[in-house]
Amino acid sequence: MSVAKETVGRKAVAYIESGMVVGLGTGSTAYYFVDELGKRYASGQINQIRCVSTSTQTEQQAQSLGLPTVTLDEVNHIDVLVDGADETLDSFSGIKGGGGALLLEKIVAQYSRKIIWIVDQAKRVDYLGAFPLPVEVVQFGAWKLFHTFDKAGMQPSFRKKGVDSLFITDSGNYIIDLHLGKIEHPEQVAFELKNMVGVVEHGLFINYPNIILVGDQQGGYETIERPTIIQ
Ligand code: 5RP
Image (cartoon, rainbow, N blue to C red; front, top):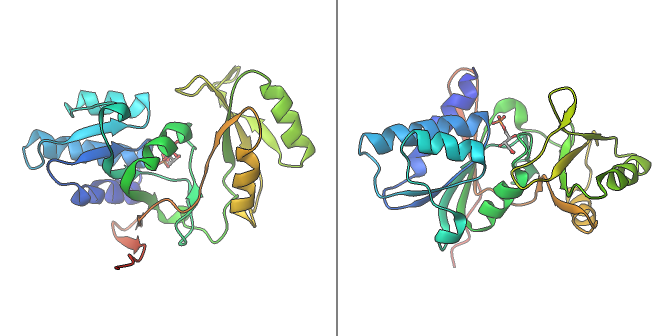
């Protein structure tokens, strides 16, 4: 159990108001957010919300708590999306997909008016890349992409489920993790990956969150908020 993850997960519920459409992230930190939201909804403190999940795992948790869930296509937009991340920069970019939900997370983020990332201190970094960068690829020709990454020195590995099976995402794809060490130019890497046929999505989230809540092991947290430009 991580005090830091639980702290920011539960604190993030403060951003949710009755009547909102809420995006539910995926992972062990988002778990606490969904849990707290479920409690507040059950007690009537927050009502008339609709929730859009970023994975079947989160969808199951939300439903088990009695939260009203809808699909992305049933709503115009999401008011607030609360999600975890694997690495974050204070310049509001990061790596996501450690839980394998990067594609749905990025799609939901695309339609979210406010995005809040909840992370523990260890994930706040000066450079991205120590965490392996997940790349979601279609199954057909996946080994071809693997060899391309390998030749480019990107140290790829297929994401596994257990010892023998490959991990399959909610959309039926594989994940290849790239062990890059230090990504000097995330925008360039993101651009190049996006242009590779067979790559469905990558875990570089450039300029996504409006707010990052960074938790510590003492139960405290810091709020990093993107400045808003008032016109
Ligand atoms: C799932 C994700 C998660 O948000 C990310 O991996 C962080 O997970 P955790 O909160 O368990 O550390 O991107 O695809």
